[in-house]
Figure 1 (cartoon, rainbow, N blue to C red):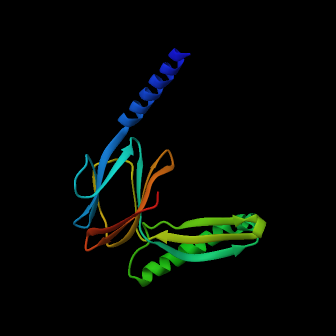
Figure 2: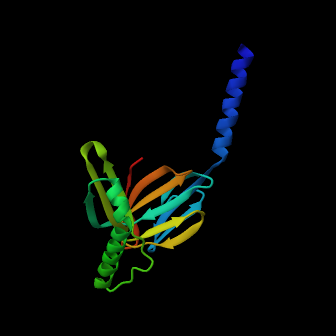
Amino acid sequence: MNTYKKMNKLTFLLLLSISALAQNKFTLQVTKNGLSLNENYNEKGIQLVIPEDSKFYCFGEKVILGIVELDDRETYEVKKKLLYLKYRDELEKSFKLKGKSAADTFLYYEIHDEPELKNFRVIYFYYDSYLINSGFNWWSSIYDGIHNIVITKDAIAIYNFYIQVKNGELIKIAFNL
């Protein structure tokens, strides 16, 4: 029985060391209106330990275009395409008013289905900025405001935090997880 316990401990230590080797140390920095994620720790920036094959997302402010209340999911399925087209038009109108193009902006929606409350809502929105990057050691421009940073591994959020940027520099960070 003692040999069995030793084997379990050895197996556990081996798995732990393999897991530790699969982690990479990175520094997330905001400087000169840019966002970068570089290997190795740097005294300036946010130090993160990230597993291999992770994905990095940066969402700007969520701008809600409209909320639709419906009777149920079946009603939504019938109206789905028309609702999408309606709110895509709203997105384009709002960008035209700002003198911008919505060509590279995606329209998103969330479904809130609460059958026990007989409530079905669809929220249509877009992000005022959006960045996805599957690789590391990169730089991307970033503007002033609040940005939600999400890093995932196998579709599970490893990090989820907000940063606030002002005059191109990081001024605040708030972790959710």
